[in-house]
Image (tube, rainbow, N blue to C red):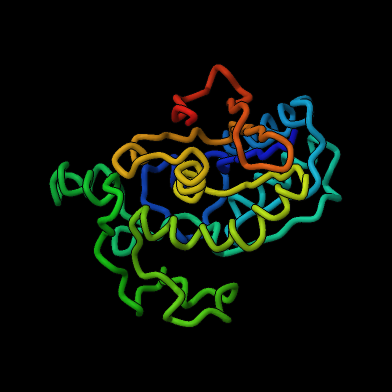
Length: 241
């Protein structure tokens, strides 16, 4: 049986401050680091040996993976970093406090920006100091590729080629894989794997630092089981078709 572990990074500083983070690189909090250690402890005893890992280009996801692999005594595993696994880009909302933004624009408008499947927030200006075009790690990406704002649908469209080109073939080849990424890039993968409807995927909550272990029938992507390893912090999973 082949296994895929999806790990949302541990709590970040901007999670704690209730701010829209997106592509901004922020550190883990002390709680976030503890969640990453716990994730590794749970993965170590989950019953699978992992062959490789994927993560985004963002420090909070990378560090979560490092800490988890250290707990597993598997820091030697090959790791692929891919910007396509980055968090959803929150556009002009980036850096703003969510509660204060709701007071300014209204709860319903912020709900649409945050939770609608295909409505992106207002775009970020190119001269915004938080724009990823100013970040050296994305220097090889053109402005046509770099987002200025994304809906969940747009995030999914970015994640799917990474899945199709790199991750899926390795799973079908029998490799057990860990992915340390973000709430929305992982939500996109959950939509893809569980065939979740557009209206339902926005309701799926992925807890920080709690590995979602998905097991597949050998040589297929037919899901045989799926569970969060920390039962006390588990959230509802989509029904498997």
